[in-house]
Amino acid sequence: MSEIIPFESGNLPAYLKNQNVENLNGDLISTVSTGFPVVSIKGKIFAIVRGGDRTTMMNPKDPDSPATAIEVVLLKGNKGVSKVYYAKGYQEGGEDQKPDCYSNEGVKPEDNSKNPQSKQCSTCAHNQWGSKIGDNGGKGKACQDSKRLAIAAAGLINDPYLLRVPPASIKALSEYAAALQKRNLHYSQVVTKIAFEAEAATPKLTFKAMGYLPESAYNEVRTVVDTEVVASILGTGVVAVDETVAALDKPVAVVEKPKAEAKPKPKAEPKPEPKVVEPEVAVDLNLDDLNFDD
Image 1 (spheres, rainbow, N blue to C red):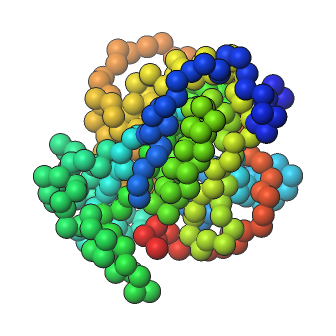
Image 2 (image 1 turned 90 degrees about the vertical axis):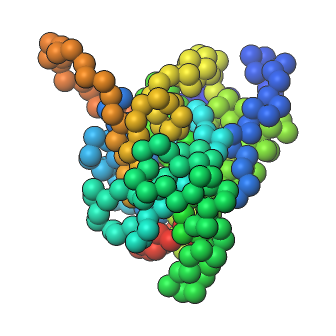
């Protein structure tokens, strides 16, 4: 987007000044529709999962290589840390496997959890550090954490995606939001570059502000964040959401009320995906270890 105002210019646009953003970034600062598109980070590769189809995002400067960085707008984050638990562990490829217990906001099990493990997440034994021992002997939690974000391409704010930030990346997200807050900025007012940390064996994300959103795009953000689809992405809406942990890499099924029959509509043109950028550092794209508890 050529209209983006350089972030490091130090010149805060007039339409972003005199706004009280104190505590507004709190939903990213954490301590440790028929479906909607999902950004997958499996294998340290960005991909779009939309309607059951998975499309790897390619590096525009090297079309034969997957993208390892994208530029997006962070529309809104779920203030809580989402949790999901499988009594027998998640089996790779278990398409229809449902978790025994899950919570979108990390406070208590959702009403449709098939086997709630505790009345409150804070007192659940599976939510305690050391409740899981990995194959390498490392400690973790049997109930997996993630941070639900609604994000969008800067040029298509009204087509939001779900990004699940893994636990190893939550601290970086929190620090990023806190840094923006020191500049009296909300995270939705800037374009954010999301990339993979090169040294990390598993998908670990980094966040960097690239520039201020143009006023027209920012005004659209303020409208989109209050829509039902964003509430569904964050797991805070009234629609029924059936979580799975593949979960951490699959679209969430959203149950909607039946709609009246409508006349067939012309086939829509493909929607633009989040902007991909050339990675600043090389990463190993062959690692498949997805243990987010390391």
